[in-house]
Image 1 (cartoon, rainbow, N blue to C red):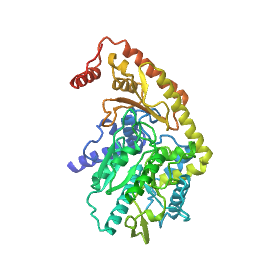
Image 2: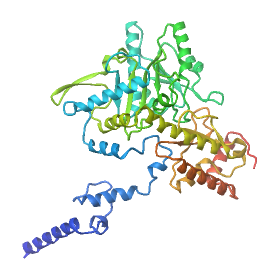
Image 3: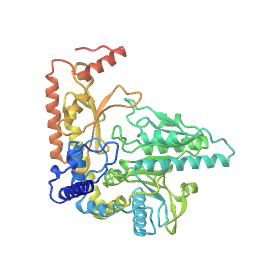
Image 4: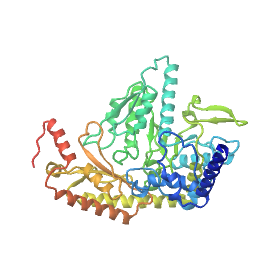
Length: 482
């Protein structure tokens, strides 16, 4: 009897699962009556449709990618590019024996970038490397500079225990990670109201015989501006001749590397400059590829230390690789090469010009609003920041953090944040314009900003964030005039 009953129960459960799998509506299934897994894998699986809906429904309420003006990463690609990348989703780039054409395409991408950046290298295959993102590309450029410095110091019989790196205080966190992981002192030049970007003379004042490189930024994450690489190169050339040092430049062009060649090709920031020995960029930003993809290129093979090239027997072949990671997706390489073919120089220029046009429009309209002040009168890349006018801020009952929260209610993600050390009292907002953000969408954003400001100006009492701000200012000994 027990066996029969148990058999009937098993049969009933099996039939119920079969029924769920074949005929039950997704939201009527057993799986949808249970909570989503938090810390244990479910005992039983479910249908692809149910699994898809559970994941999709949890993320549905989040900001739509095209309304996320905080992120730099690409959120739109052609349907054909998306299909091409999806078809390569299972391809591991490092398996060069199985996918040799992917490796060839990667080399072509490096060649194209090197020539966009005016490389003097005459080799058929230019010297560069693939990265998961611009962070890995930055680290590879930094490691190469550190190893070159160390090898030179060893050859001179000098100590190698106190390396340092010099750059603006408006650095991206990858440089802090790099310096921490490789035990390199990070020396930063503060931004000021007189120097909105890296001050070359102030940077050289921090340099010495232990400086592995100076890192200017093209497309500063904090501000959207470009450091003056040409001015830095001139100053550094004079400095190196005077001291006998050989301090090079690595350009962090995460954003600008795909903007300057198309919109300002005559600007000298790249390998045309004497001391620029390496450049890194992000393919998944203005390279217009879905994340994650980064590139680093050296001026010549002699600037890539041999210690960074690792050869390994893998799947029946000897593979030489430069990178911090080993296995990595190949889909992004295909996406980058697709873009080069699909867009060409004219297409890239058109896309970047469109983004710049929308950014300039937003920059101008926000600058016209009495309560706001743009950080700089012009923009260098399709992103910019602004703050509250000092006079307005003294009397306001709200802060930019309130505006951020208000815009979020309409789906927009426009970040508010404090600036780096030395001007950390300045709170700003930033808009990053990417492919997929149109003039029409910009008008919608500006309308929502104006409506929010109008609502804030009707407040009778200060917001919570405003009260917190006033308390902080009072602690600094300043007085408000209401």
